[in-house]
Length: 168
Image (cartoon, rainbow, N blue to C red; front, side, top):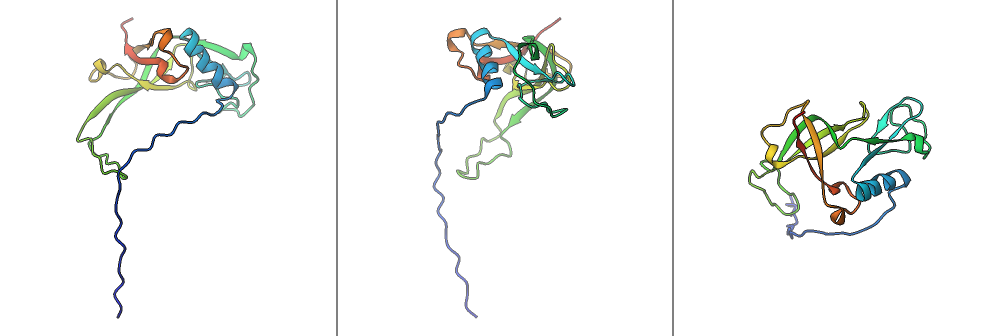
């Protein structure tokens, strides 16, 4: 019987950096411009069911209607909110399959699921938490956004440096 030979593959580690631009759409564009220019969070409120969508969406995720881009549908949210859940990303079991790189148990900064003041059950923001709060985070805590200075803001989610806990 003929023995089947297997081909040997050589792995070449590399990192790929790609830069591109694409339109964000009217709602997301307004959302990011207000973050950049005014350090404000704005959501869209569905006129039919009242869902407050963050990030703003053109179609309501609850009742599936198209939301018009009218001023009365926009809602300014607070720069404070409630922490719903926090978690820590670790590299203890993660191996990059393309490079074999292993972070050897490195712990990255905590992430939080945050409901900014003025939102409802449809309002959720996932963002970086202050690394100083790593061991003290729990659901129900009050948090506030720490914004970059205006000259450093570019109109992305990173315009908020992180959220930190606050006493009220």
